[in-house]
Image 1 (tube, one colour):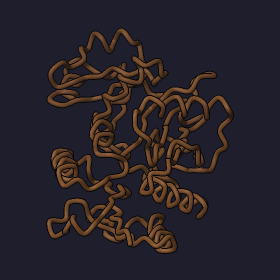
Image 2 (tube, helix red, strand yellow):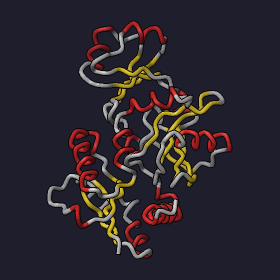
Image 3 (cartoon, helix red, strand yellow):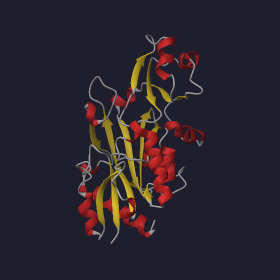
Length: 287
C-alpha cells in the first residue's frame, strides 16, 4: 500500500479542515495518507513513498529553510507533487518575467531586486495614482502594502524596497469591481474556478481579511488563456492555480500558484475526488 505525506505546517498539524477529508478519499483508493509537518525534525521521510504539498502556509516566512528542505527531498529521491524543480522556480515571484517574455499578459509590474532596486524616477514615470508593493517571496498578502503616489516620497519609497526583492504594481480597481479570478487545473485539465472580492474598503481578497469567494464558470477565452499559462511549464502539474484579473477585455496574470495554493475544496466534495484521482494518476504515470 502506498503511503503519502500530505505536507502541512505547525499551526495546522492535522491539515486545514477543507483538506482533512482527503485522507478518507485516499483510503478508499487503497492509499494511506498522513498529515506531516514539513519542518518537523522528528519525521522519518523514508516512511513516505510520495509527498503532496498542501498546507505549508508558513514557507514564505522561512523561505531559506524551505528551500533547503526541498533540496533534501530531492536528494532523498522522494517524489514530490508538484515536482521540486517546479516548486523551486515558483518560490520567487520574479518568475512572472518569464511569462511576460513568453507573451503572457501580466499585470503591470516593476521588478525591484536588492541588487538593482527600482529608482523613484522610474516609478514616477508610470504615473500610477496608487501603488502596491509586495515581497517577491510571499503568500496571502504577507507584507503587502498600498501607497498613495501623491504622498510617497523618494526617501520612504527607497526605504520600503531596500535590502530585498519586491514587486511594485499599480492598485487595480478591477479587483474590487470585478474580482480576482482563480482557475484551478489538475494534471493540466480544468477543474473549477473561483472569483474573489475584497471587503469594502480593502484591497486584499483573502478570507482572513474579509474577502468573499464564489464559484465561477470561466468562458472559453479565460479557459484558453489559463491553459496557455500552464503550457509554459515543461512538466505536468498535479495542480496549478492561475490567478488574474480582467482589465478591459483582457486577462492579466497576477500569479501562477504551484506550491501550496488553496484549492477551494470546501465548495464541492467532487473537487476533492478529482484531486485524489489526479494524484493516483500521477503515481501510476497515467497522465
